[in-house]
Image 1 (tube, rainbow, N blue to C red):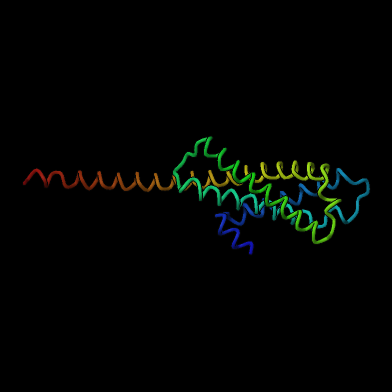
Image 2 (cartoon, rainbow, N blue to C red):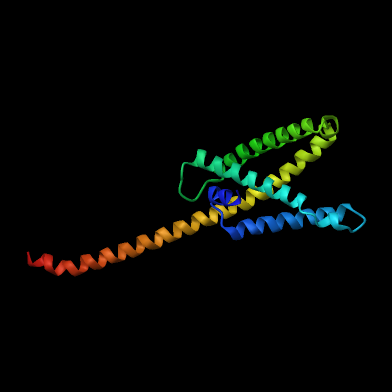
Length: 178
């Protein structure tokens, strides 16, 4: 499944590993700040895996929004385009996040505990931070990848242009004979 996300998002393995390690250390740091006792729970993987899945969802939403809105527009994207992509992806992420939380709370009969104003505010603020962080990382990665492709294509074009100029110069004396 991770390979499918990797292919769908256009990410390389190193970037995915970086995101996972970032999620792991982020959760561990949060746990260290929130607990007085050091125990094995601080390094258990369920929190980092959950955050990693959230990061993949954020990146997938941004990717889908880019594909739907930008229509393979060449670089550079305008600030308005980034703002539009980010806004649509953000509101979609908030809706998905809250709906999935509601489904889980309904399944475990914890709606009163998980959907009061305090918990909703805290969870939505956390979702905002997660979205900004992971969408920014993805957009930087996406932009750098497109820029590298653009530079490669530009280099190929310049090489072909130079080759055509050389061919034109080599045939020019022959053309003067006719």
